Figure (cartoon, rainbow over the protein chains, first blue to last red):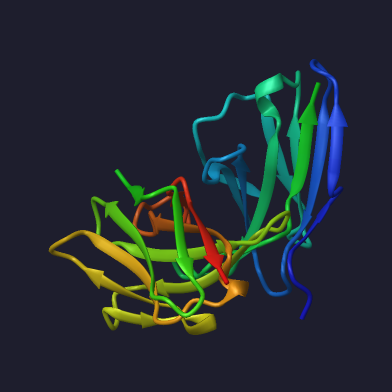
Length: 115
Length: 117
């Protein structure tokens, strides 16, 4: 069984640019959540995708957007990058049964540096 | 609203000593609670979870946590620390009952555990 994978591992961008991060969910999982972890902080919820639709959003501006594909993989897009967007971006997948979501399994993260 | 407070951003213990990492939560619904561990330059690994069954939860690597509703606490313990336990530990609460979002996690700020030889 393949775990959650993310690409790229590291990324350096300039302020104002756009970035796309990718996540492949664990086999059998239909829900993907994205988190931002700033240095020295706990992860903060960005949004969640379930059956290819956004299913809840945290306190992040609209320049943070995402997609989920039919194979349940996902992308996180960030437009107009700001210095404060520098962080570790974590993807987590889970399996939803009924209205319950089982525990979330995290990928290794993508380290984004904005200069 | 859900929130988590981890008391102590840094904890240091000697190898073989008791590990105690503190977590208090706030939740408007019966909580699901989790402890995750993060090693340097890695993602989060689930140590254990509480989902309204037994209040004493056993996890991987010899860790356990006890849910105490009256104290709104979910402290993580391990009887004897190993050097390999050195990592950052995060407590999290889920909003699993909140309709639209399936199990969104609210994390504490983390506790860095150092183990001295």
